[in-house]
Image (cartoon, rainbow, N blue to C red; front, side):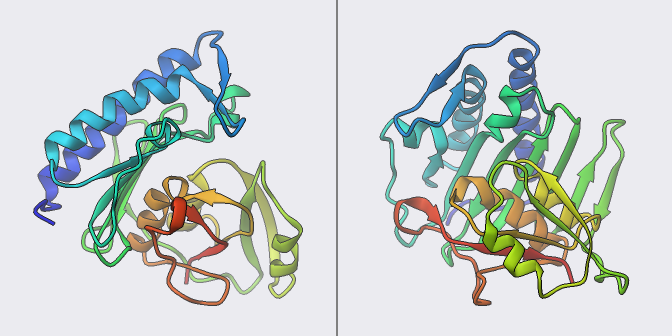
Length: 257
């Protein structure tokens, strides 16, 4: 990998996530059209517009690194990433929340290295005006609506019981089975990759996902959790890796300490 993830590159990635988020907000505030992709999942002009903003910047920043982006992938543009670093881009994660005018949707950009692990991710929630980013090397951070930046970290699980964050749209019975082994003080439903960020900033302790996701749904949030000192593992306790067949994820557990 010829690309160096330094502070200047991180700032560029944060900037492009913000610009893409601004573009989604322009559409979010209108009575936008809803389309269906080949797999019958919904898509809006916001997904397409944000991705069109992000991809040229990534190509300029790192010409040799392939990009796996949700809308390009849906259109049949599937790069070969075997053994190489690559970007994962989800221009609007939580399209269902976007359509319902719920503010939890996010813009996601992640960098996966040759070991198939995320080494950087940015999760921008434009309607909430909050941006999260993280890497094992630099740590994890949030930028609030007023521009304040603070470092974030996962927390020790409270003795009085954990807070579990679960998918608003895709909770499955397996989640309940998993949580039976814990003392759960509260269970919070949330959408998009915001769930990873809630674990990363220590307002939730675990995010169990026992349902289908794609790698672009998880790469950025995964990196933020790692940067904050947490883990993302398979239910069997193995490292959660990327560059899987069809870029389809299996089940995973994101946890704090």
